[in-house]
Image (cartoon, rainbow, N blue to C red; front, side, top):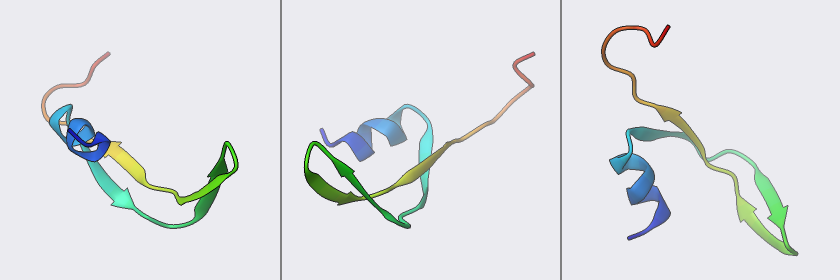
Length: 43
């Protein structure tokens, strides 16, 4: 299973693919996720 699919299964959705980042010498695109929220407040 790919990480995107796992995040979607956990309730996150992709909101942006803007920008570039570097990790351990490799460049990659930055992907922002937001938690889908349904229901009452958590407080």
